[in-house]
Length: 143
Image (cartoon, rainbow, N blue to C red; front, side, top):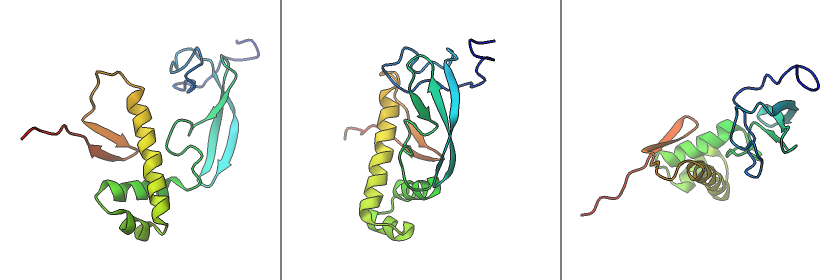
């Protein structure tokens, strides 16, 4: 039994805030459920870190964080760009503006950059996956 009841049953969730002492370590067991909130895409779980006292959700630290569109629309846009479709064609296909397409691409790029920056510096991934989509990264070969 914990201080205020049974131990946390939240497994595999760690505090996403870098200034927290439990940052990135799901083994501490310091994360507890803190309710839910509604989005355009459904219900999202909220958590609270007992070490730093801050709250966060399932989407914190992802490309979907504070995104006002459904995951499928966002993923369809990124998939079209990933498959070589131009910005204007993607906008026509997804029913949005070119500005929206570029915003989604920027958001996805920042999320991937954050992911790769948070990993070991000597790691060089050959494939970076964004949900169920992927892009192959390869080094430019000298001619």
